[in-house]
Length: 324
Image 1 (cartoon, rainbow, N blue to C red):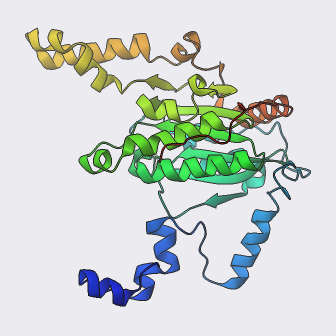
Image 2 (image 1 turned 120 degrees about the vertical axis):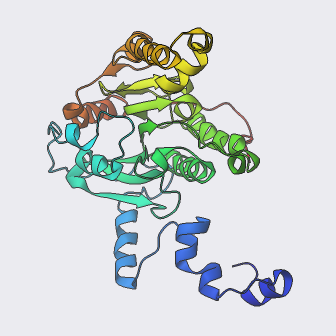
């Protein structure tokens, strides 16, 4: 901590212990200062070794590549059961990650802070990748101030050490609320946008289920420079959900109808049928391909191989001016 419990009590009158103010658990779960926290030294040192095994010696090298024993063409039929088609049903995104990566092994960064988004290092066919993914199990996977900051710094870290970035999207939008708006969700969300736009490493995004509003844009959408964008057949890319959109777009028709509820249901059905069917995104050029979920691992590995030699030059300048 910066100021100890005695100073805090003298200035604010609050009483708190040293651990309660600045202990490992506090910084791992509340403040986000600590990326990792472990119960014992043995586990901590083992995890440090695991972390170093996925990082290059310096920023001019590529991450260490290993020989994968997990087949690159392994099908993952279980993904169809892990991710419910109903967009309102939660699921554990870590299970999806474990099914996609080599041997299910991954190292989550900031695991206990801003749990509505996952940042993890893993391997695909022996190649290290950084994974940014929404976690529908927490706050439905929305982006908020802390999640935006967490993901933005992770994207910058991956870019600094030549680690390709894989983004798994299932995001309903930014978290609404007075506290979020007054806390600067716009500028904090812009940090994630800036991080992605500034990254020169290979960038692949995959839409598992839904991608709504500005949150979809900032999470490495094709419009901000993703190299390859894929979607599962259940994808929904839109400004908002069908119910909310119908209430806005067809407000007059619903209000003037003899049976507003029946009219609303009809408009929602039409909106879904015309604008939110599985291949609408591909028709509009928002994704490069709609893929079979069971083939996701193979598609991602082939995409990484294709982008392996990617090279992008940034404009000549002292440094950028990122949002703060």
